[in-house]
Image: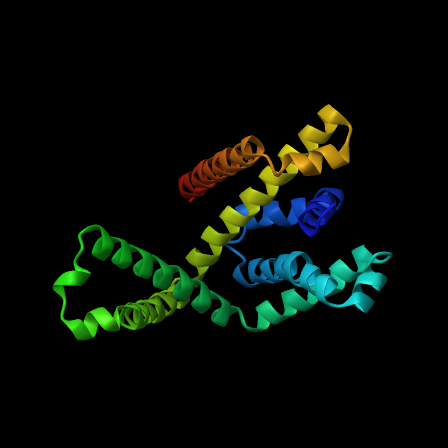
Length: 225
């Protein structure tokens, strides 16, 4: 079982940690911004940072093999504390990379498809990559600043997407396991395109249903007011 397989195993085994976090991110991230950011940090620390540390340091790997839950909680708490303290920077970076990346790929695609680069002077052609990268970085900075001003919305969107994805993975994984009664086969199934498509579709469905439920709740509050 590879590193990804091990992570999927822990994701499914520790569902009682991830599922409540996922529900919170889907339905409450908009209202409790800093708590949502802390949960992002917990997920990044426990499910992104910890696997990297395990892969690179044998001493950590040997200790974690018998104390994974404790290690996950420690790494998750560290990630939660860091993002809680630096959440504005986190929001800025999200805006920076999203706006910057979209700008880069859209402009690059337009110029390549319409062969516009060849119509520019030689200096721009020779330095096209640096110019495009610089322009994208400027747009990224603007996007980052806008993201900070709309941080609650950004956190809500990321929370809804992240939470929906986690719930989809848990649902597909456990349904598959209950059908096969074989965890190894369940883990291997996530390398199949069909299963990944089901996860993607279920993520969209959960995201859509959460938006519908939240809109209904807001309408009910407005009626009561």
